[in-house]
Image (cartoon, rainbow, N blue to C red; front, side, top):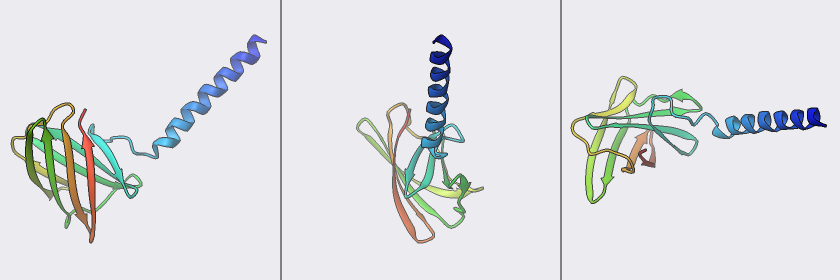
Length: 124
């Protein structure tokens, strides 16, 4: 009886782990940022006090952002900061001084190839 219970427990644990991996659909952060998914496109925001980067992936593959435009609004408490992100080496990026921290909210308006998406993030 103990062997059967142990086998069932191992089976449930294995299925649960596989289900969790399948449910993520590859939407995990690959660069240590926060991921938001819009229209099956992954947007990963890396927000540091001196650097903002937005990585864009379609089914795990980076999208060409060389002609993309993006505007990011950072909302931290009562402070709001609007930042334009420019294509740099395959990502959308801005350097400067940014108020970012836990629970900072960010809203990005991203245009790629004629498609515009509004993407929301909450920083951890």
